[in-house]
Length: 291
Image 1 (tube, rainbow, N blue to C red):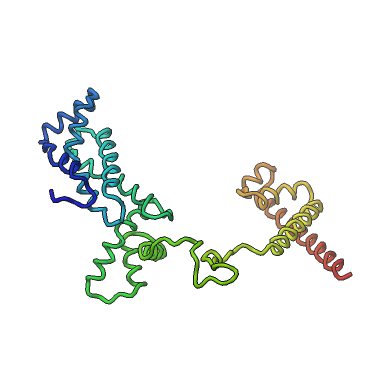
Image 2 (image 1 turned 180 degrees about the vertical axis):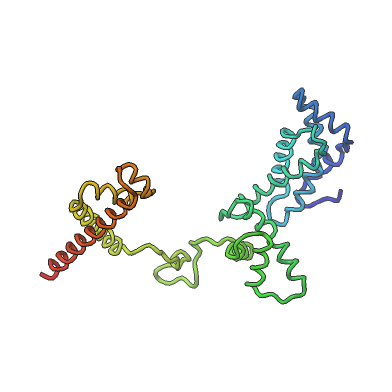
């Protein structure tokens, strides 16, 4: 094995010194570990597959993380594979362990590649780890693709939204930047920071106060208007209009002992009475404001 930067000679030598296991020997070790909890057998099984861990770690080295750290995470995945392996399924341990090793390394990369946390769903992970490969493949096709067409094809290939592809392109194209990083030259008031250019979509304090006052006023008007209704009208409006899950006309009619058509008529009449009461209150309020 050629010396790979970031991998200690002792670790590489130990991995290379471990003997290859034949199918029968591998199965025997796996059975001893599963049935007898023989830790020596488990260590022999995992030690023989450290080459696989190192090989996968080298493949992920371009994400800028330490290869020894990737190997360490891969070893965790290898141990998890050994704990879950079922030798009776007639599958080679290396085939089964590869998924666990890769998954462990990918989780480590996603949590440490950037201080900005991205999505961890299966679709987002596929986008993160396949974006560059698919983009390079499409650009090698010879077609002159604009960014929008390129992003659209990547989104279709991975089954994600194009906006997610655009966001991933921005993440992979530039390093993390602190919001407190200065912009331009420092003036007498101090440096201008990036955070000062963030737009706050929330309403201004006076607007928020106005909305709260108007909301409370409308609630008071509605409560007063409801007093103009009969008890049955209030109940029908409450269960049909003022709850998260409205009752059906049929269900409400069964509870009240009337037909669903009668429930609809009462509801329509109650809404009209409510509308008239609210309009009257609004006109009175407008008249008071003009005094």
